[in-house]
Image (cartoon, rainbow, N blue to C red; front, side, top):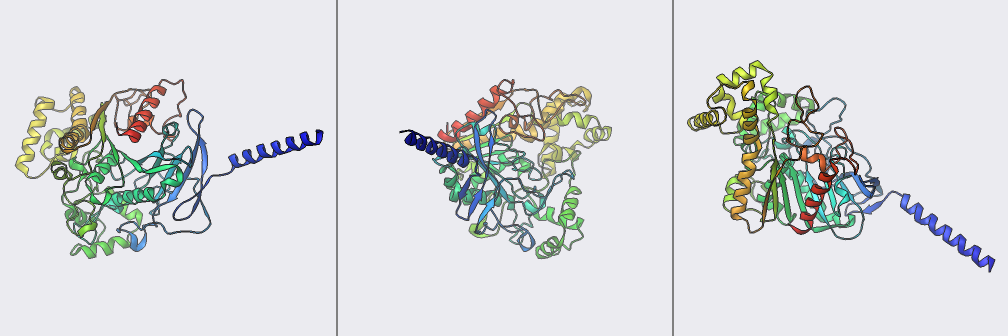
Length: 498
């Protein structure tokens, strides 16, 4: 009997050891292309998150693949590590951040590798010029307290992602097509991570929000998503679409001493330029007083047949009902871009120019058409009357200048898009204003740590752990309520559409 008891004890001990060893082993999944080895982290409340970080979803867009649609990742043998971030896509960035054209990677976060949980694909902000879906900027510690699968990823930016010659030589929209490739990868593989490929929500912020609405109007994205969240920007904003891509590409090529007689000459010249040269030229092309929202952006592809991503102005497509009619959440923060007022007012040259050259500066700064000139001047006059009562811009009009920035750059176009979509869609449209003011912000009053209202990006603080800028909250922090509220609201929407 003692021998039997000893044998039973040893068996139990071995079983416990096997379970513990299995729990400590790095998780491995089989995708359609090959095996991936992930890692585990803890959520802000201590739950285990299974993460696959730096998963290649497309071949490197380098060499002759520059200015081409993404090439799906090729199958591999063995097990690839998916445990750390990869370089940012090329963009203006501090020297300590590594950038590379070989940047098309995504991250998948889940609590269990089985089941069929709703999936949220997040497209990052950055004006189509900067930003990243890398794990360090989109940490899952808050969102993965909810019962979802979260996917974040990179897409090409700036001239590498959005330059266009206005024809089939460099048609453009490569960043949006990278996002589309992420969506195709999710459709094919997310089941291996416990996700439901038939319950996918696209969630985008700022330029990512415009991207989400571009996917709503693109026939190439149909069937790959089922709900949408577009926060703090829209596809109907004048800055979300380049109206004359050929002219912009000519200006840009001139800065790089390229011949501009034909689109083929522009393309061949740009293919020979280094990433550093391409970024340097982009920095020299903007005409705004302060760095603009975007330099390069999506375009309507007039040539290319059925492979065109964007076939008309989103405003027209929303008006005519030619879009994916899925449940939509959209809205803004309370104050958005009005922090830009304090920076403009600290520069007397900027103040003088905006007072004396409003008709020239206004269209760039406040996102309204420069042509036709007669109409543009009427808009300028109406804005000066409405916001400033025709008084000069000065420190005494900082609040009014701030609201002009907020309304013109974000709030008006988000409301416009919501109204256009709601008028035509058979699915619900939910509109919000985020006005929770916590201890932290992306923008502070100059010389202080006092938030400059509730600005652009501030709601992201409660959805993602953004480790380079903000602490990881605990459950007793005053921000905990908003973390729970936002993550549960979006997770429930991803699950139910309401």
